[in-house]
Amino acid sequence: MTFESWIAFTAASAVLLLIPGPTILLVVSYALGQGWRTALPMAVGVALGDFTAMTLSMLGLGALLAASGAVFTALRWAGAAYLVWLGVKLWRAGGTLDAQPRTDAAPVWRMLGHAWLVTALNPKSLTFFVAFLPQFLDPRADLLPQMAVFEATFLTLAFANALGYALVASRARAVVRNERAVRAVNRVGGGLLVGAGVAAVAAGGARS
Image 1 (cartoon, one colour):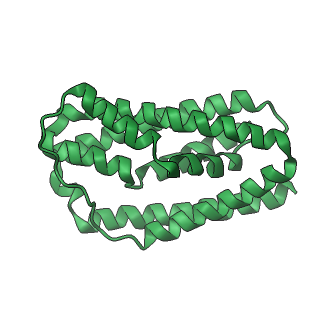
Image 2 (cartoon, helix red, strand yellow):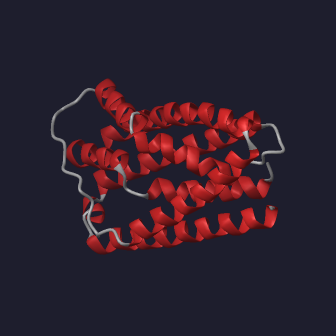
Image 3 (cartoon, helix red, strand yellow):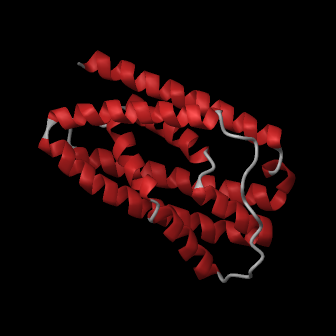
C-alpha cells in the first residue's frame, strides 16, 4: 500500500461518511431531541457498528481476493460503478434531512447500542465495504496490514463524523434543517463520488 493509496482512501471515506444515511439520521434525531449529551455515546456506537460491519466484510473480502485475481478485478469495476451510482444519487437528492427529534430520555448505554445496531446490521454496509475497499488494495502486497490500516482510518473518520453531526445538530439546529446547506453538501459530495469512481476506473485501466 502506497501513501497515495492511503490518502485517496481517506479522502473518499471522508466524503462517503458525510452522506446522510440511516446512521447519520439516527445521530441527528437524538441530537435534535436531547442535545449535545448524545454526541459521545452515539459516536462510539457508530464506530463500533462500523468496526463490526467492516471486519465481517474484510473477512469475506479476503477470502474472495485469495480465490481469484479475476474476482479482484471484477470487484474493482463493480466498486467504481457503485461509487458513480452513489454520486449520481446523492447529486439528485433533496435538500432536507428526514430526521425527527427523539425526545425519549434514553440512557447512554441504550443510545450507544441503538447506534451500533443500526450501523452494524445495515446490509448496505456489508455490501459497501466489499465493493469499496478493492479500489485501494494492492493485491501484490500482504492484505492483512493494508486492511488493518484502512479499518483504523475509517473508524477514526466515522467517529469524528458522527460526533461532528451530533454537535452541529444540537448547537446549530437551523443548519441541518436548511435546505440550501443540505443540498450544497449533497451536490459537492455527489460530484466528488462520481470523480472518485471515474478515477478508480482510470487507475484500474492503467494497472492492466
